[in-house]
Image 1 (cartoon, rainbow, N blue to C red):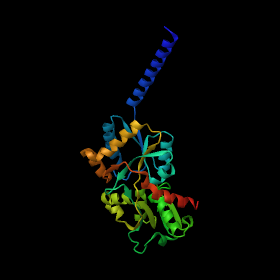
Image 2 (image 1 turned 90 degrees about the horizontal axis):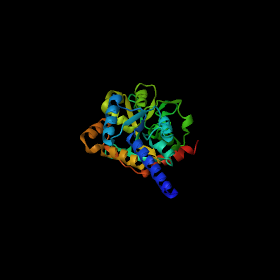
Image 3 (image 1 turned 180 degrees about the horizontal axis):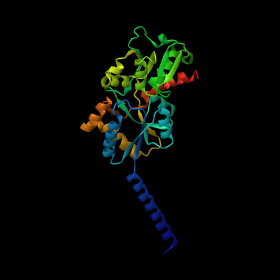
Image 4 (image 1 turned 120 degrees about the vertical axis):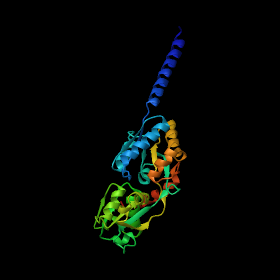
Length: 286
């Protein structure tokens, strides 16, 4: 056998090994999706059902990985320990050069939501965030648009330095816990994801009844699902399609109803321009 034939056969053999390796890796693919605290009361049961639903549609295992904070989820995603994450517009904007939109949930028919400023139901006098000077205020997460970024920028817009405005502020690390802190009187005000407040009002009306919505922010892009930009295209489109088609079958619609969502859209980057503008304002005082 000539050397040239040996070389060609050698290359073909290596190519076959690489192809076989890729096929095996693809067959064993598990989609790891990061989540922060979920608002559902029976979250373990629901996540198991959603996990099974996506696994069936993808014909690959799906594993939800839960963490307490957006920072933890973002770090896992950027390090390659997650394939995708349901995060917030704030960390997405912060890391937009490394991330790509996978899908944006539809709430009340649109990929949009608002931040709500809430106070205890017994407080009938507060009309805006500026009325809460020297009061105790509850934020959800330092990487939350609705639960931290927007109220900070609201105060800055009134010429107020938010770092020295409240007598005390603290993070609850979950929107539901902001509502609870305000309802229980632990905080005299709080900023919460409007979608979460509205969903809690359906599932736990006694909890939201202890609060009053003082004001609502302009519309922002709904907290998106994202992947790293180096996520393989075939896996990206498979996962995106599974999400987009949830509203097309009865089981998917049932799960969406429990999430209080209408479905998922592809979304577009411009949805998060408002969040990006707020980031620039906050960065200007830090």
